[in-house]
Image 1 (tube, one colour):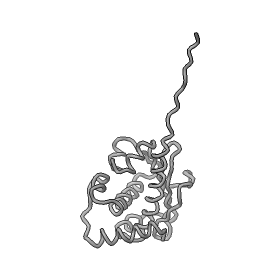
Image 2 (cartoon, rainbow, N blue to C red; image 1 turned 90 degrees about the vertical axis):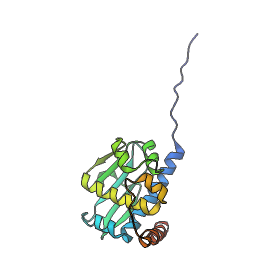
Image 3 (tube, helix red, strand yellow; image 1 turned 60 degrees about the vertical axis):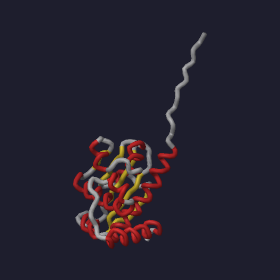
Length: 176
């Protein structure tokens, strides 16, 4: 009697991949919108050289986003940007870690601590971009979710938080 062994292939995680792809698109556009509105982000990115490109990539074959600094603001480049042309690349090691990050179960600082992310390029510049991403999360998320995703929830006045949130949502959705 001949015994046959069948190799079971792992699932492709279609839902998680599509969710992370949508979130990459939304976060990339929101980062561009925040760079036009928020003064703290403008100060943070003012030190970047003209033409600087940041990329967030999910390994091994997941979605990505790229943002370029041009004319004192960030511009969303999309997900099909060549990694070789990016100055700083933050790589999330797998789709599971990206799903934890983008469902706000885990913050960026905790993901770095748990070795779910790696940086290729200048670390100080990457940390400046991460601070900008934290500001984006503060604007986009309600307080109970943002507290889980951020190390410290900032104390902003009413106008900065709520009016800025409206403007950023509008700019993100319309692409202005």
